[in-house]
Length: 185
Image 1 (cartoon, rainbow, N blue to C red):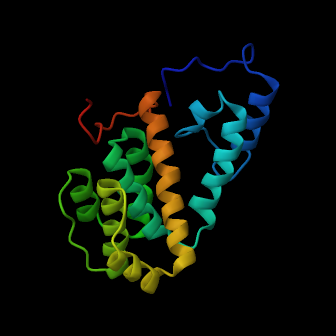
Image 2 (cartoon, helix red, strand yellow):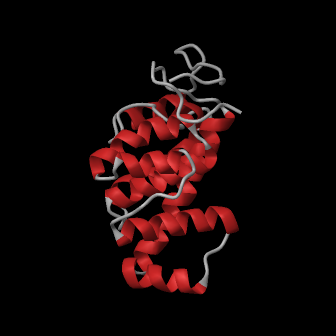
């Protein structure tokens, strides 16, 4: 991973930054992929964001397939290159088809065979577009997902929007030969 931030070296890394680096590298992620390369510059933010991210990614009430769909939709809304590159393979492994991911990436309406996938996509797109969801969409979400899982879904969207903004502002990029998923502005 590379970014526009000052590279942390043994000479310029503070004790708090090193503590957070060790925590991230020894945690379930095991690497600094994504926003952690930036967040470690603010150790307290990194600490709190890492805990929220671990819950959103590994422990929420939203099944992995649906959370990865929400993350891809978020990445596309923000045109976050690294977020897409990191999560597209995970989404495919979790059961999101390449036709759905390609439609999302190219801002086309995906065709869903699964009602839960359709619902998560609709909630995500509606919330990003209108900043709210209608009473009918809310009631449908509560009926299908339950209130607690809907709260988790909104938390996932908020967290991965923070991730996307961080990656975009600090130009965090993966070192890869793959073409970028979105046209650079």
